[in-house]
Length: 327
Image (tube, rainbow, N blue to C red; front, side):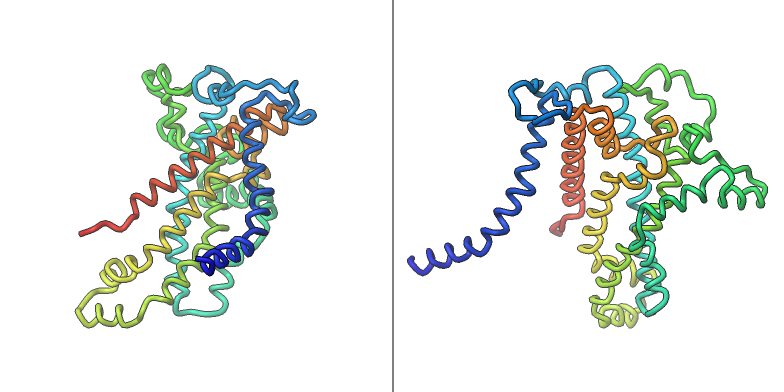
């Protein structure tokens, strides 16, 4: 027993510095932010002063149950981010897997070229894309050469579904949910959001390509050779052998992609500031704008905790969907 006690004590002594650092710089700030989300702090002085009003869950109620600009903006940001996640996560995962399969047996230039956008400054690339997708930019110039009139990328507030349908049915504009009409919920991403989606897919696929590439190189070649001897086609070998072996890496890529897409901020801040007409507004940028521009730190912090809850719940759901099932 004394030996086990000494081992436990030695273990705690070794991990104590990490526990203290994480407690001071991670857990304590989270608890402080949680307190701020329950107050009406305006950013002046300390949020722990007696003069700072305690409002309880009123900040959260303003986001979900109370009619007003706060709920409308928050639900708009949730709608925009849902379209963003639904487009980016599948596209970047599929592109990363395709690139990994392409470069698996090739070395040198292609691996570097495909990975290069991931290590380039997101701010610098965002500025370049902002010029490329301007009304007189390269994309519209190419479309004009092909006889297609390019959209006003960062000026048109309509979603792609609204652009395709045109005038909305009355039933979709007269009814809605959580402060937005059904027409607003079903609008689709705006063309500005589509430009940001293309940027993010291009810049993030390289990182996930490396993860898939490492997993592909760890698959025993004997498995593929055995399937080939059994007469399996290339597609059958990929679907029945390669893809199941990539399941742990697939879960990692999807999880990181899901977290990253719900936290998108840099590209929104540089390229659109939430415009046009709030069609690129996301919860992360709304939290920043509410706290640091409108000086409503309580609601801004509440938005960040709701965003944290969304990410945790979606990650748990994804883990449940991809869990190993008994035969």
